[in-house]
Image (tube, rainbow over the protein chains, first blue to last red):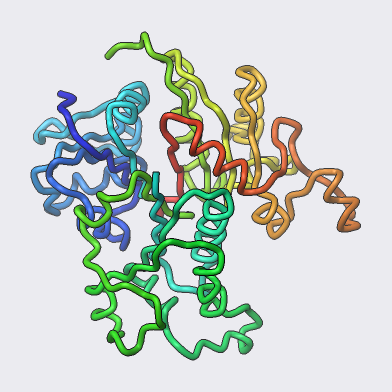
Length: 94
Length: 116
Length: 138
């Protein structure tokens, strides 16, 4: 599940927020993306997250009734968020 | 360990950019290399002739002109964002470097952050 | 995942309580950091994040009291927490010292927090293994 990557992008904005596009524009397919807070809403749109490794915070998914069963998204808890942060060489919080 | 601080909000309507500038100045004051990247609506920081007396605010254009004195490494601006908001190279103040804001570009910095 | 190496984090909160989810997300993350056996070097409140340190926040009793929860967490784990002085003064958050200096009618900084400059933030980012920012969403 947790493959090697250089940068962990933590994204807490809805897809309509300008910073959402900035994050996608300034990340590469070698990076990992962690959706938190309203960021998890991206999973309900047809928006292409590319072939990035995507994770989402379980508690934020549950709170908003977002289902990840049909996708390749890794639902993780805060413990997983800590592990991902340490695994990354660099963390960018958008 | 160079830091890139990204400003993606227009000045005056929000304080976030000003607080980003304070962060950059603080890093520089402690001998930590810092650069600024203006992207998205943040490029409006670079307009010439700002006169915010009209809204009783201090000019960010002036703040920014002090950046080299404070030891800021580089002032960068995303070219696609400039194009989007109708800014050409001639419109930009001296000392600004046009770049393509992409993964390779920000990959050079150990820390990339926003002030808010 | 190996926990044999202890790592340290600095957390910067820029989103205000009750107008963003930032302080909640940061607290849950901070609890997980401690649970994993790592350390938090410092919590730094910046911009609107300084409101978290206000002693005058009184949410309805059936809602979480974020300043109180954060204060308890910081005290229990002996974690230094700093509200940026420039952000704090602009937003009406002062300790007794600043109250006297500016001749204000009251002070409202919770005891778990101190007021200091951005130098504390710079020091944290150098010291910690990772620094995470908790901004307002939308």
